[in-house]
Length: 138
Image (cartoon, rainbow, N blue to C red):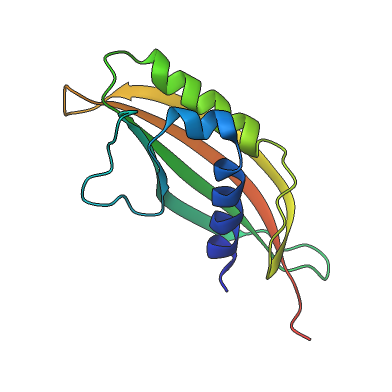
């Protein structure tokens, strides 16, 4: 399994395990379905992932920047801020067990709320930086 896929699976599990976060959103998706908005008018989806080599002595590693997008049809930006706060509580410096790699560090490095080209929508972005070590195949 790729390090990015392994990391996203652990992040997804951590976010879904946060009851406050899940009470604010309609769902957390890798790729949003055709009709992602429900009664809460807010959902989370996976954004782009980027990676670079982060090798050290005898360790093969990757630095992965993962973007998490928040989409809301609520009439103000503060509702998105509440979701960002809960994502940060779920992921920042968290212990996330991975199945095929080892997580050395994870930090929420950046978050922002912006207007969306669709005037009925707010858009939040959370960027997470993770250092992942590849485990040797036995």
